[in-house]
Image (cartoon, rainbow, N blue to C red; front, side):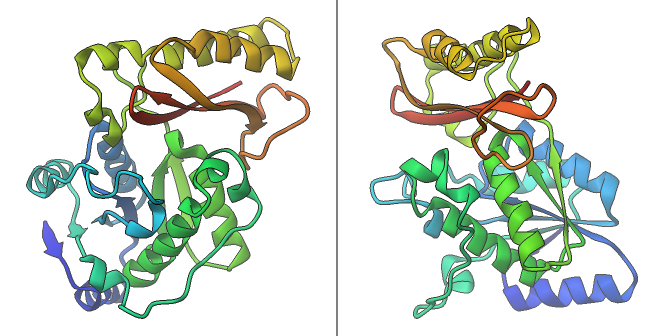
Length: 279
């Protein structure tokens, strides 16, 4: 497995692979890799000849007083995991490699990003679309693989790729969960053992909402109320519970079975967690 830190070296690596007619898949990450990320690498290996994993904690997607400084960083462990799962290259640039001191260009999606996480994290998705665009330009992937846990992010990136005629296929992979149902996330490292057990109520609440819809109830307010009541306790502060379009993550006025999802974000103790379920 090749470890690359320089954007120029990464571009040269991509050019050589393309010249040989090889297809490149990119798995963009911020490190602190877990089974969810490894499932993306495994999926990428099914789709391409060369799998590149990027590890870059992107400062522009963190707002003031968010957890950029304490975000978990474990590069040696991450590199081992990438090698174990058959990645061909890992791209680990520094912040100064990605953003020049006087950088002043951002890529902004202005519809999907205004809802859900975009309301409480107003510049978050601007940072996401900008860094993903930069990574696409450097790595030049034919396909990029993202996780469905970040369904809104996937929808925004798909819209960006469509609107800007980027020549890359966006593939999403299923959410990977702990045995108790908690969606695996790098931020789960902030939870202690008891909190990880308690946070399982997030998925339980989503399952309750899905069960209500499966039983024939298509009343959005009733579904949202059930999820909110099911997830709320002394440890949990609800940021949002919304019924959205499955593909765009935009809020909907009616539930269309098979075309909708319930998306939720909560503060569980001091940790912000997101999850969703298709209905």
